[in-house]
Length: 153
Image (cartoon, rainbow, N blue to C red; front, side, top):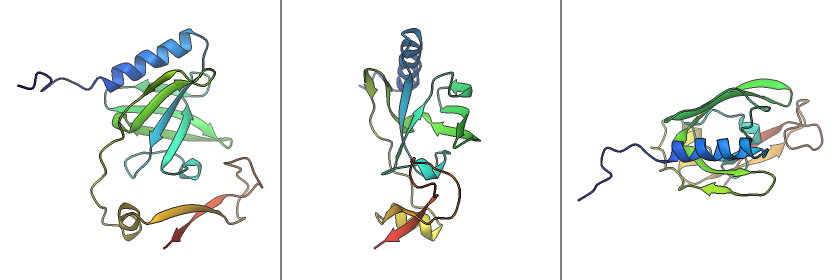
């Protein structure tokens, strides 16, 4: 008999508790997010299908860690951006200063998308960032050029 049927996930409660622990201890809370089409983050900062985000109150505006989503606004390369993360895509939360925190299972893969570019990604084709030299942003701190995606077959 499954006694957990109908109970909400513990993930959002644990994320909120560790965020509070980090804040109360003077640490900087960071989350690791598994990125797919359901996650709204600046794609130019995504590496290997993941993004690491500072979710401290000093780095975010309007931070909400709900039972279904983590939402906030933050500056990336000087530009304010809206971030929306399904709670099941948060795969870790930890304190930057000492690495203490908790990891969670990765989310279930999304259903294949109708868009051919998304379908290639879902089928396992790798997309790699390539420096194209067009744009002033410095997402990874080097060269002053904005990355672009290139299909590697």
